Image 1 (tube, rainbow over the protein chains, first blue to last red):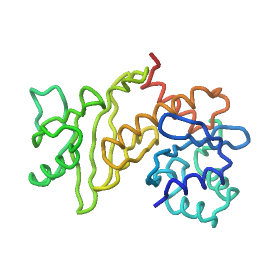
Image 2: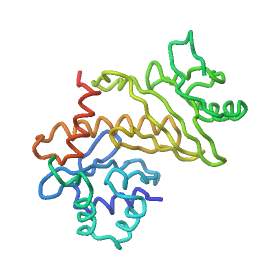
Image 3: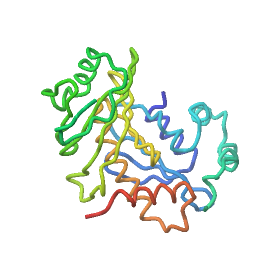
Image 4: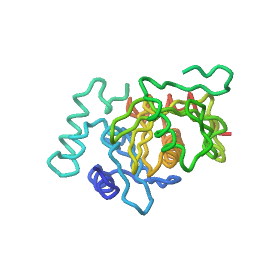
Length: 92
Length: 154
């Protein structure tokens, strides 16, 4: 399970911009200045599941765990996004 | 399920044993509406004035619930039309998803997961609409277009 602390670690690794929201902090991932994706990190005290984060970052659950565990680098993740069709990195 | 005569719509109850339906609706409705009867629409106070819930599929450890959100009250935002969301979880944890926009939130109960999803939908709407369109990647742009098609500020 990806926990709140995992979510914070993923946001940090993505160098995400943190925006305070109503019940969540919104982590906004940008690439070359472009807004690519975002996910919510709950501010509740209990360590809740954030297993949905990989989906919001266009990753598989496995890639999400690897990204958290550092076996998937930010550069490799960006390459994964680049390889998708359409790529979330494109402007459309 | 035939719900004629009701103002709400049950989305599905595919292949549910009746006893499980009772049990699972009871599980879902604890803390929301304890007066629910099997097969009847579920009114979820504090979520919206009308919300319908039914379990679609079951396993010993997981349940899937579909429901409808029709309001963001008391937030000053309106839904142009109700949206259907999916909740997947077990006794201790639920994830509510609005799949069309790829937005998900969790909670200890279905009620909490729905409330967290509603809050996150608005946070995401605010974030995406505060960004110049030309700064959005294609997926973010599509997400914004979808949210703008269902949500409006009041």
